[in-house]
Image (cartoon, rainbow, N blue to C red; front, top):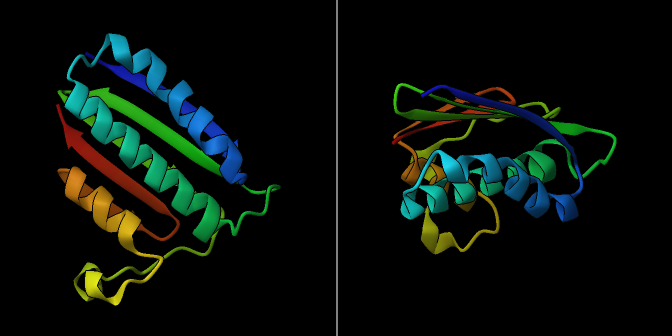
Length: 128
């Protein structure tokens, strides 16, 4: 089954939940596994929030672009912001540091089968 969704959201944290629900709505007829849907909801939320907060610094004139594709039993979620990009080192994250940032990408990596970080875009791939 092939499916594609493209969307954009301005950098307002108050709009993220509604945007994620709108994005997931057509998937409910395609993906019946509730655990996978939960994972996709969390991946989308974390990536979009990261783009809004860290990438675009909540500047509401900037946007976060979303591409979600299903092909060959894989879901690819690509989120791109207007920030300068990141160079995130997963090995350096220490949960005992109790830092307020960094956890989202660790969660996304744990829920994804593959995670690709390129400048100001992140692609999470989840097998169905």
